[in-house]
Length: 42
Image (cartoon, rainbow, N blue to C red):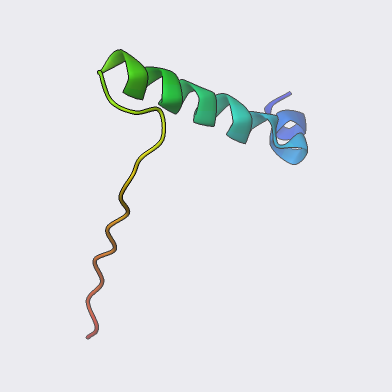
């Protein structure tokens, strides 16, 4: 079942919605407003 959900993109939609709900419950905006990328070149 999970494979079918993944192939149809449902798993990503479920996780995205859960993330939004958790952010709102924590008093934050549903979507992040800043993206920070940290990389190291060796």
